[in-house]
Image (cartoon, one colour):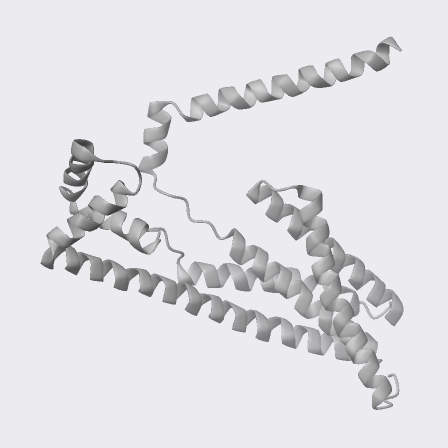
Length: 270
């Protein structure tokens, strides 16, 4: 009984210690010198979304091909050929799409930036009034509001940046189109190739190949979900299960679609 009563106290103490350590770390990170150093580096670019999107889509694409081949009764060789053909073709297509999307986003940012630069040069009083109304809406008024307006508009770089963020909702941090495309393609091909590995082993029976492929695909879906959650500070297990269910649903759809079409057209299994 004593041990049972003591366990919650111990757990509470450990939780309090963890919170204390976390708070101390937060205090250190928010020391003026640490803040100055962090801000001087500028915002960090991240390609987590590119890697996650490429990995999930690559795994879904190849395992859907595998599932569809099995559902249609095709031999293992067909699954391998179609799987690798789709792997590289879809990976390349997705990378190009991501490249064009990132490039368009960057070009849009530059066009809005040039437009605002021209407005500041040609109608400065109108742009000052926009700054005034932006900060008035945030609760500034009177002399303080005018001081804020004067301070911001005294530096054209700051003035332009605030107009881009507040008026257009644009961040000065944009993705590098080439890096985004490269990360997408690499993640797509790397993760997408894993469900195809069992089909290269000719000594395995077809049903064994499919079961191993399904296990590997499920593992990859779960791991991608977990890694995504760790990067974004979300619940690890829940994110893994959600991604696993998404991939499993896509594979099941491919399998049953191929199976029903095989039955409809009376195609004999290979």
